[in-house]
Image 1: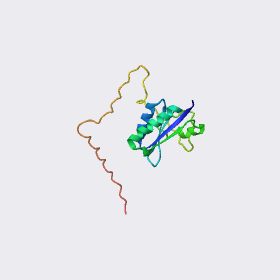
Image 2: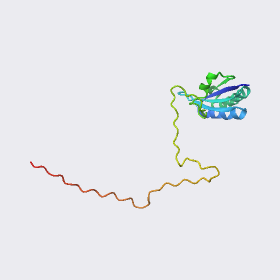
Image 3: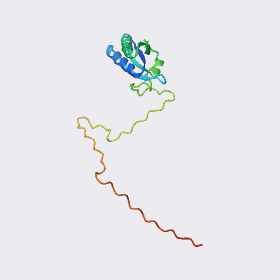
Image 4: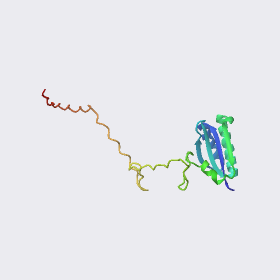
Amino acid sequence: MSNSVGIIETEGLVGAIEAADAAVKSANVKLIGYERARGKGLTAVKVTGDVGAVQAAVEAGAAAAARIIGADKVYTLLIPRPANDLDMMIRNEDTVGYAKTPNMAPSPGAEAPRAKPETPEAASPPAGQPVKPAEPKSAPPVGKPPKPAAPQPKTAKPRRKK
């Protein structure tokens, strides 16, 4: 069997989380991620797997979300064998939780992701080495505040003769 795609769209994030939880627990499917629609508060949960498993997962997820937010706010879609061209719509940079593969082409107009510079604090120790606790930042000394710097004497300007 080929991989199919199931989408459960809910109004709000709470119903989407409940749908995703029920979907992945009810069948052997993989959660692709979720995507927030712009403007209406819709959230789409995306799963993939064998056709029968995705169908069962979508039904279970929709039922779970409907118990929380109402059946009129849950929409479902099952694509048994999606065309290859649909992949860029299903797995894109707007999909939260989807790990972008290196060979995935960016969408038109999308900005390239910026790599975060690795700081010494963020570097992991080699395997088997204990993790050293972070050094505490130095706190300002306790007691009287420092005295302000003494004002500099003003220099007299030479006077012009009239």
